[in-house]
Image (cartoon, rainbow, N blue to C red; front, side, top):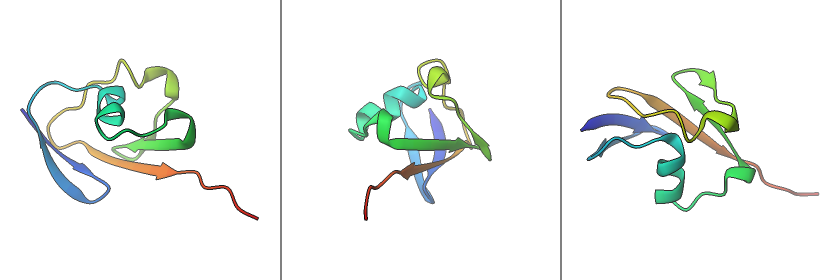
Amino acid sequence: MAKIQLNGKKLTLKSKLTVLDLLKKYKLNVKKIAIELNGVILQKSIYKKKILKNKDKIEIVHFIGGG
């Protein structure tokens, strides 16, 4: 079990989740977001390899088109 912070909210994860698993859980489109994990921007290529750990801080930013 891991306690993480996601966009300022504290969450408890019941099992070992990867960043990609977390995105799927919240139905987020990988192509339209950027992720910062503990102050470092993650490359999309490692989303499915990076396992979330206790006390990780994640910020997810959505890209929005406009004009």
